[in-house]
Structure formats: C-alpha cells, structure tokens
Amino acid sequence: MAWSEVHDDLLQKVNREMEDYQTRMLSRTSIEVYNQAEEIAAMGFCHNQLMEYLHDSRAVDLEPLLEQEKPLEFLAHHCQTRELCRLHRQTSSGRTLRRSRPVHRGG
Image 1 (tube, one colour):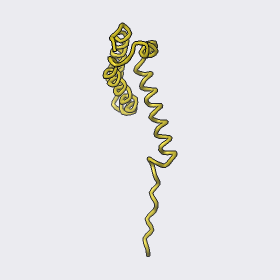
Image 2: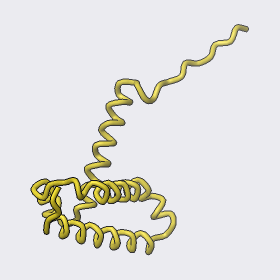
Image 3: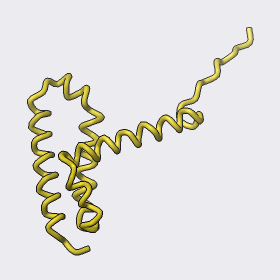
Image 4: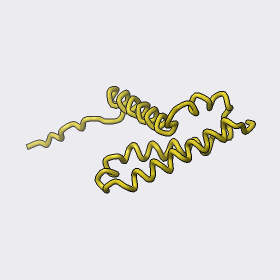
C-alpha cells in the first residue's frame, strides 16, 4: 500500500498516545498497575499490531481510527470486549471451563 499523510498522522497520534499512557502507568502504584494488567496488555497488543500492519493498510480504512481522540484506547476497548464475548461464548457452551465430576471411591 502507498504510504500517505493519513498514515503519518495516525502513526504520530498513536505514538503520542502510547507515550502518554506509559507515563501515566509509571506514575501509579504497583497495585494500581496490577489492577490494570488486562488493559495494559490490550494497549500493548493493539499498539504492536497497529505498528506491524500500518503499512499494509489503506488510508481510507485508517481515517475512522484517526478521527478517534484516542485510537489505541478505542482499539484496546474493542479488543477487550471481543475477547470477553469470545470467552463468554466458550464458557456458556462448556468448551473452556468444565466442572469436574466428583470422584466416587468405593468404600
């Protein structure tokens, strides 16, 4: 894909957002960081994925993301929501979490 001004603008915006986010996390206590572990993981994952695939994306597909005040936060929230829905579907169907049957011993 051709690199465009949209790519540049999004790259700068996302990198600024990630730097600000990291600074906020560094100012928190360890328990606060621990309590935000899932969010931190989602932010890091989304940042890495975006950096990896940005050059393969069309500008027209990136424009809605660029319009977000905090594109990484938007993606991370979306990612966390999808993962929670996926886990809920799996546990509801019994594929992930199963109750173990009690062991009956003769006696």
